Length: 279
Image 1 (cartoon, one colour):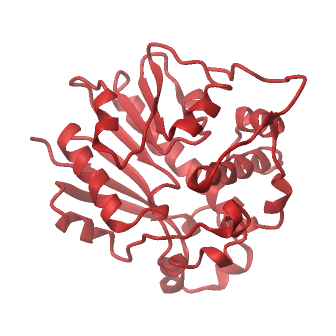
Image 2 (image 1 turned 60 degrees about the vertical axis):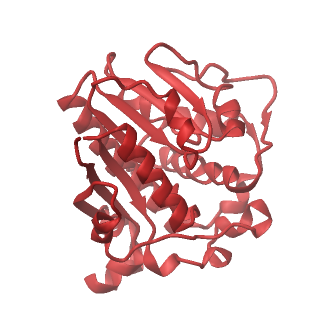
Image 3 (image 1 turned 90 degrees about the vertical axis):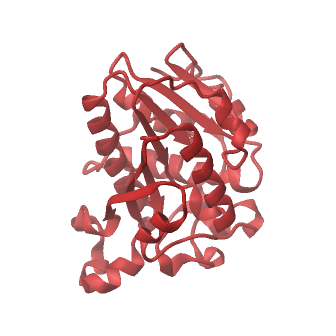
């Protein structure tokens, strides 16, 4: 699927507020990565959207750790999603907090069902660049509102749920609400989520990207050191594995490679694989 609006005579102004503005950080990171000769991932559609938005992305210049981390997490989640699609070619992928993700464009096999969920102002922006089809839909709503998921029609197909760059901005009670909704509606589903590095909790004002958007009003609000504590939440969750972004593409992490493994466990975001118990 190609974006619907590219190479326009004018750039699209960005009118995002609050946490919605954070979607521009991964868009920037993937576009910058695509320009590199040694790119971890290549996302030409992200680059085209990046070049067609009227926004000062230069504010993120120099944030190399954030940029590299997003490139690595994108690769890890691409690989996980591709494996799901290979095993379940007619399954359903639900992307929570979709932002301007282009993963469907990279991985579509011609039969997968894909649903992007995000706040109304984000979905309005998405619809300027992506065409919806019978297999590719956008749903406008908050993932913390259980009613948002009522619009998802998964039937009896296997379900994969992605939550990338999302829960770190939520309070724990909000995260619990989301998992309760997922348990009630998608028993048996797999989840891949990004878990914030514990050392970053409450440190948004020092983050080289987050501190430069939304007038510095945003914060990193949720992280777990031990992801297995999710299993005690009463949401039917089972942790199947996790992977620290700092353990991948070590050639890009520079001086961070000198830290011992114990330190990397605290410093790096993780991709966590969960399963929701079937009914």
